[in-house]
Length: 231
Image (cartoon, rainbow, N blue to C red; front, side):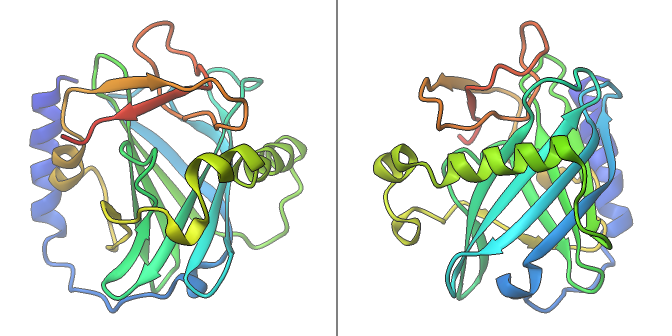
């Protein structure tokens, strides 16, 4: 599907969801907990999605949380698939860290605690992936997801990560606010936020995490690509 078609679909989605009333602010501590993948879909349709995944939101202090993400690719189940983000709650909302979050938007429905992550890919088709997570009803038992969750946590808390990025409370949380929205499908806001063009950086240290985005080469995860899509 060309980007023009995605934009047309996005505009239609905005019309359909524009009647959703504004929601009260949700606290970061209220979001803390475990979430299981309910669905993972892409536009255009492809195998750039997850067959299974888990999100764990853990409070670090009164104003910060660590969001851990472990997953399994549909296209390559044995390939590395994990990520992490820090979030900060302050007056005006909850914000993700600025570093390495240019390709993702977070949405939450406070009533159901449904969490939605919308990703922009690195491929030539300008793919967009829509992952929906719901509160887990049983403890995570999947060995692969548990192992990758531990890897993500080790990366987030690695001494090199702390050395290069500084204390969690002193990092930048300005550009990527967690949005409260009941049905955040492929909206024009998301497409507009991501844009069409992108640049990449490569980072070599093993403490830095893999980015769950398709690349414009082999189509497989490299483990060290970071998208800079914000203009």
